[in-house]
Image 1 (cartoon, rainbow, N blue to C red):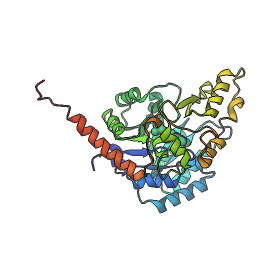
Image 2: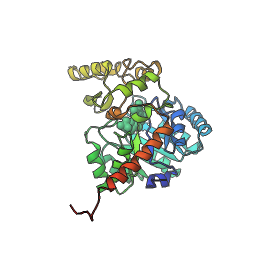
Image 3: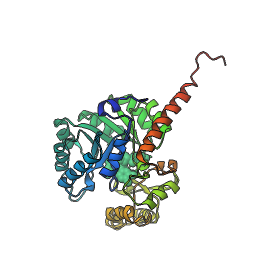
Image 4: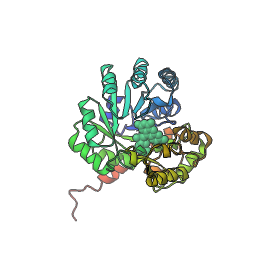
Length: 330
Ligand SMILES: Cc1cc2nc3c(=O)[nH]c(=O)nc-3n(C[C@H](O)[C@H](O)[C@H](O)COP(=O)(O)O)c2cc1C
C-alpha cells in the first residue's frame, strides 16, 4: 500500500484517485469498476431522470461493488432546475457516505448533506469559491484547473497556480482535478500538496465506461490541442471536444449581433451530446473532454489503469527522490 493520504484514510479507499462526476458517462458500471480497482467511483445523479431512478442506480452499484463509492450532484443554471434537495435526499436515504458537489450556490445542498453526516468533496475552479465552500463546512475541495473538461469557470487559472494557492490558503485537504491521466500526474499532485487526484476524461477511455467504442478510439487518437472553449459570452465557459459542431457554435457565439443564447442552443444541446456516446459519431453533437486527452493512448480496464497509476506514481516519486543527494560532492 504505497499511498496513505487524508483522502484514502477518510474515504476508506486504497488509491488516492477519484473518478469525477460525468454526465452521460458516470453510471454504476463505471463507478463500481473504479471502486473495485481501489479508487473512488462516482455515480452522476443527473443522468437519472428522477431521484427514484438515482436510488435504483445506487442499489445496482451495490450489487457490483462492496467498496465505497460516491454520488455527484451538479448544480447548474437551468430554466427549470432539478429538485437538487430530492436528489441529495435520495443519496442520503440509500446510505451513500460520500458526495461530490459542483456548480452554483451549493450552500443548501451541502448543509443538507452535512446534517446527514455525509463526507462532501466540493469541486470548484477558483480559490474564492473554494474558500466559500470551506465556510460551508465541506470535508475536501476538488480543485479543477483550467485544463479540465467541462465547466472551467471564468478565471482561466491552470493547476500549477491553483494548487499552490490551495496549499497556501485553504486549510482543508484538497485533491487536484483537471489534466491527470497517469502516475506522474498523481506524484506531481501529491508533491504540490494535494491528497489525491480527480480524473474525468481518462476514465472515459476505459473498457467499463458506458460509451461507444468509437468515442474511446477518438480520445486515443486526439491530441491536447483538440479541445475548444465555448459559451464564454454567457459566462458558462465549457471545454469541449473540438469537432465541427463545437466550431460552428463558437462561430455563432463570436459573430452573433444579438448575443441571444437561443442562436447556439440547438448546436450545444445536451440531447445531441448524449447521442454522441450512443451512436459513436464524434461529430454528431458537442461533448466534453479535457486537454489531458493528449496524454491518453489506450483503453485499459479501470483495474489495470488504477494499478498502473499507482505503480507509476511510486516509481516517479522514488526516482525523483533519488535526485536529492545532500551528501553528494558536485
Ligand atoms: C464527459 C464528461 C462529463 C462531465 N460531466 C460533469 C458533471 O456532470 N458534473 C461535474 O461536476 N463534472 C463533470 N465533468 C468534469 C469531471 O468530473 C472532472 O472534473 C474533469 O473531467 C476533470 O478534468 P479531466 O477531464 O482533465 O480529468 C465531466 C467531464 C467529462 C469528461
